[in-house]
Length: 264
Length: 213
Image 1 (cartoon, rainbow over the protein chains, first blue to last red):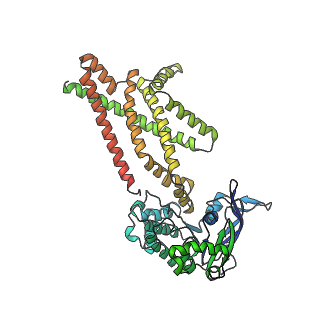
Image 2: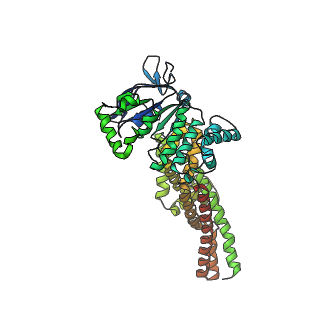
Image 3: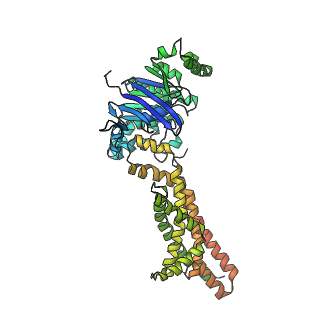
């Protein structure tokens, strides 16, 4: 692992009006590993992930991607300063994002969704873009569905297309915001399998999830958030094995009830 | 009622279709601008857009028509009654279409824009490739209804002496003393035109709908 982490979060605070959702988060996401963000609803894990993508403005603190500041940096007077939109776009291009609601563009086919940015951002010819997009769809096992519209695909298939769309832009880091939370239980497996094989390629991944089994088996680092603070971080073995932090005990109980006992 | 009379009505309906189509097209262009103004962060522009919409939605088209018709010569613009009529129809439908489009743009799911941001699309590309096509898909049924409403409202322009379907029907009714069959026939012609418009609207919706969940 190199010295500069893939993602460095320092003192990040996020307030919505009077509500403080993140209260000073420090976090390093190591390169080439899977890091899972866990925590109860309202703990701020999704907000943190969205701040890392700069889909939410941070109220304070800094985020660095591959050592480069995203969104806010230090100005000449050593004060926190909003960076130019061009800088935000440049740093963001290292990040691929997968959303809970897939967010596929409904008026484009699966292939069109994956090829879109290759044409409008990367300026590839339509033919080249389609070839690359097809190769990505192949990787997630959906080349047969290339000409289908999102509305004609199952939730699991839509999420796999969304993963292909993010991967087509060759990101160095992939962010997943509860990628299986809006899927029927029988469809989560196909998405998790795609994520597993992506992890095996050495992709740096930061995953907000409720899939404790996935976190325990794939992640090399678990980060547990509670009430906007980082409560525990460490290897899954350390975080999940007893004696555990009482908050984690309480949190896991809910999932053990739901039949995840055998996975931990 | 003879076929000859019916044919005169059909011929006049060509003008109804022409004036309506021109007004809907001009209205759409105006509406795009007004919608952009209403959604813009510029407070003056947003207020101007809202004022425009509340005036033209809040006053009867007949009054707007007469205002435009009598106002233009007063400010030195001597235009034909056809132009005045098209202008009034365009302004009125622009207000309604602007509201429809505003609703459409505001209903584009935020997540689609965020996905575009994360894929590096510029603001312009996001507008052209994502927001506009999705908003138009969402508003197709409402825009079709508005086109039908305008086509029917265009019968009002007969009051400023523009020749179209309703004017022709009135003239024929008074010259042949057969108001009932003639107005019934005119109504039938409006109905047929609007069924065709509705059919086109449904075709467009179906073409756009393939992707909907």
